[in-house]
Image 1 (cartoon, each protein chain N blue to C red):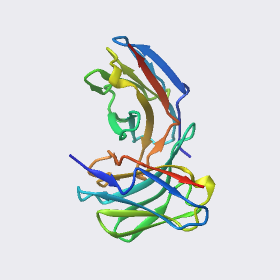
Image 2: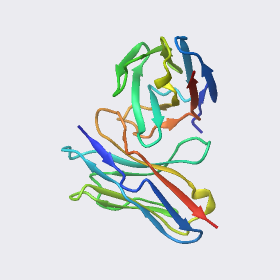
Image 3: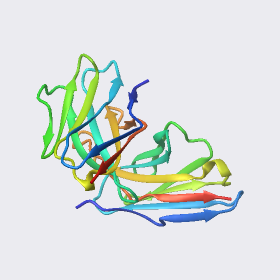
Length: 114
Length: 113
């Protein structure tokens, strides 16, 4: 089975802190994604990566950056956390769409910024 | 821009009954894929069922089936013989060649004993 893990289930940070959310997948997937999930808004794509060191902005990249130094790991960085970034963050991975279109999700990190 | 609309924020159903969740989408593409994902309370999001737009036959996975109406851009999910474990948020999603999933806002389904 595909396994996508995220470093923390719950995280509490203070405004202005630099925050790192880590995601690791064990199935050699090329594609990795970071989503933000808010009630009533569904899932919105922040960033995605289709290869090591490659990244593309999603629909809501402002205030976020990402890093993919190794194929299995995709990090989401909040350079200076703000209260409006309090949310559930979901990581996902997939093979290229030419192979399959199914994304596999991690358990999520619930981030609270005080 | 592609959009996905789920018009039912919340639904409930009695155990063993059948329920249908609605989803409509908007695209000018002819080839794409549609999905229903399930997110149980405090648990991981998992794929329930997928449909390829070029296939006319509706997808089925055990108690889950879809009613795909391409011309109407409608993709509803039917859950038969509902079980307590079906209680979850259900998200309809769409993808085409960009490899970026577009999600609806979700429907919270509660199965009552």
